[in-house]
Length: 298
Image 1 (cartoon, helix red, strand yellow):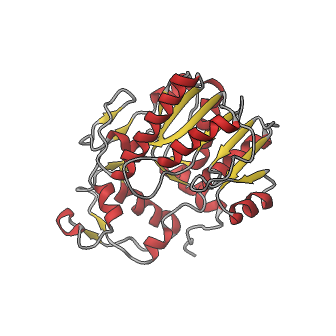
Image 2: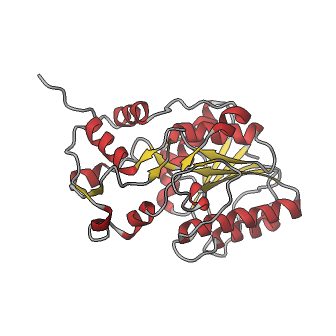
């Protein structure tokens, strides 16, 4: 039996699997597609295919395992039926001993730019955040009824190698002026992986952790700093009143919420300090791994 199972072994899960293997642990990645199987096989990661939208049985035992739940919710609606189906498979495949769920800080909704810790009330308004809160609640019921241990990570925007909005910058799409843009929060993928492992090892049963680098800024500042680091033109800037004519519905959703996340509980309870506490360090690493460097002047 595997030490750990990573359900939804995509961008974050693959890096999590590599870290686990480097630590001498056995790990199984669960993916939805054949291409996912091939991707993990090429990375030397044991994998199996399971589609929660289908009717096939879970291809492995989950009894007593450490399960990382990274499966995204459906694209629409207010419920996360993928999480519900995962819980239902436990009756056939066995119940995990410990489960770490990757949620979102969007469950807090708009906080008016306030500093937010894990005791802040959840007031999601966007459907994607409502689905994540629904998943949290379903998993808590499972934990209470079956006794499995649960840790919830409420994760800020993830960036890292291969996960940078460079194409948006190359296309010259506009952004809201920094002075009008709301606060947003980020975490480098490698810091997220370190926190996932720490939460699985020593997180309190029932604990919730905000996962961010602790240095919020506006999304506009993020794009401007990325443009500078990558040697790309700065995007044009528009007022918030003009934004709806220029920005996508998804981007406008992000613009509707403002909060600054405290990561004190991660640092104090899990003992994790971010390797990339600011965008300066994180963007340098991400661009370097991608082989992208800002052109230097002769």
